[in-house]
Image (cartoon, rainbow, N blue to C red; front, side, top):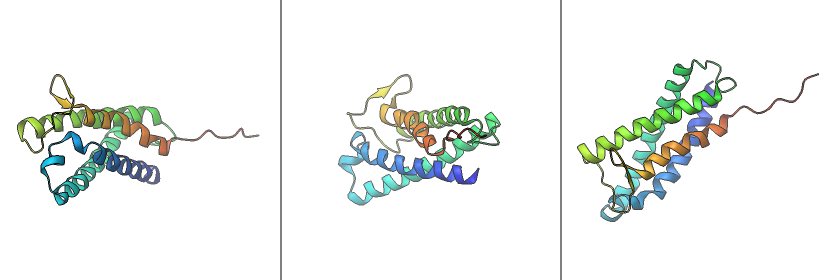
Length: 145
């Protein structure tokens, strides 16, 4: 189980790094931050994404009792890990944008009701976990004779 988990997390880190860079113009940091601040934010956020992904995977395996993941329970773990990461992200965006004001959306960021979660982070956690799960999806076995 460790090798598939490592492949999943490596895929999540790579995908999230690309996503974090791509969504930078949707945050005020893109205009207001120095290059060093922007670089730090990308690395910091990608590291946070890796922690969220690892925790969501562990929760998904535990909740689905898929002890032989990914050969058994791949789809259930994919769904639960995606929903766990998405749920945490909705909470974290609300906490950090509205309450703590740790970061700020630019006017270009579409926001989703009811909590005003940014569309980009919402899509990030809706799309990237299933994509990364493809890195560990079991392959079809040839017919045995």
